[in-house]
Length: 167
Image (cartoon, rainbow, N blue to C red; front, side):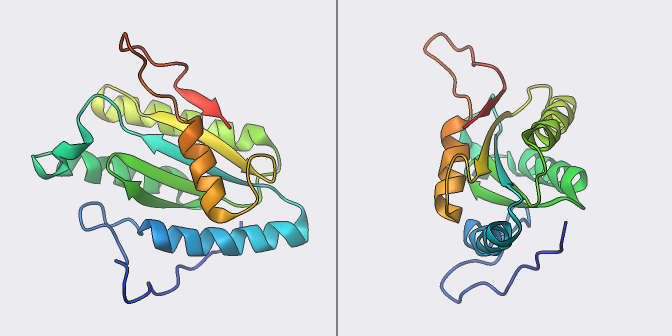
């Protein structure tokens, strides 16, 4: 995977999430847009994984959940260190952008590794949604939204669909 440097953040948006140290959604969008430009030239798909931590109220981030968010971010960074970019996109959601995904199984394999590692970290694994360019969306923001929509949610009785879903 080519290196996708994070460009300096615009002055009106934060460069990094203050809790996790991960890039902001705006910085991920910038890098993802460059990945998509390369993908249009090369024909290699790009994947976005949306990781939603489960089992706690996302509004509690200011009430002692910062260590869990930091530990989760560190784990995500470690797993994708050479193959993608991660960002904290909202509350308990992280996004991972993977360039040059030769086959959907590569994105699903990364999602499985993240799922297992998160379960080991805090007992309840995150739910992960996967979206692929060009199948699920054609621009950076739409690709992130497609991954968010694919992320399993808790149903009325408290059980989730399969922990990993595709767009």
